[in-house]
Length: 277
Image (tube, rainbow, N blue to C red; front, top):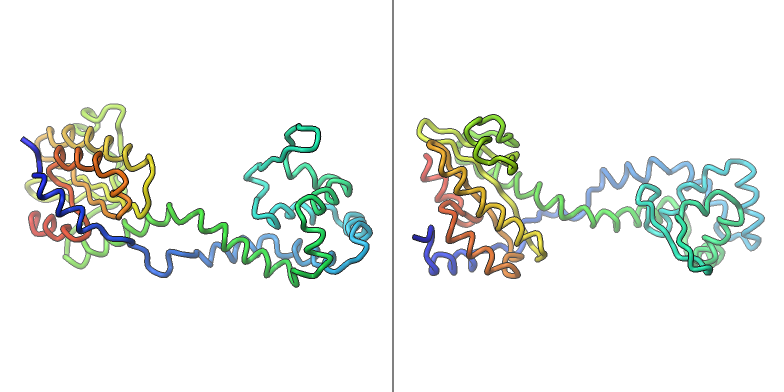
């Protein structure tokens, strides 16, 4: 017998939130400021290049004073040394971008072929520190997927706290020997654990505002984990998930919905709280 009916699933899908993001989600300005501050001295030195008609002469002057200032130049094209970005040269060979910063000729090649030479000489950039602050703000959008999960956890924690529910966060399955045994290779760190005199609830939460293959993988994983946990006396697996991204993985979520008794979204999570209270 299915854990839920088709009608219940259809209702669940109509309740999905478009976003769970507060305004603080969009940019992590403390991190952005730190990233800029870490290279601010080098960027301030490189400001010397702005507006120079003899750009090579200016590069040579800085090189003679301190060649290390050029190590940060990859951020000017929105990459970082740690990203190990590469490019294909005219000889059809692949080279690391950062290797260009080991000589004046390499730096000039970087400036010319990226278009930065014209930007600097034309004074399209007035201050590299301010410019890189904008670049870092743009790069920070890549971290939004990770922040979305963190925001969902904080949101659920706030709901639990407001309801007066006692819970623990980030609890390893190893804390429960019987669960560890049945999970085998599927050992997990559960987002929340709620323990009552009758049952221990092992809870996973996530939010997907966009689609992707990960949604299918998550649904498949939890469909496998839930019966293992629920088969151990005194334990129950709970999945709180939301986000319109599930529309792109509707079929896989429906399979999970039919197999997992305790699936909730942000609209129905109070049903779970009422049940255990």
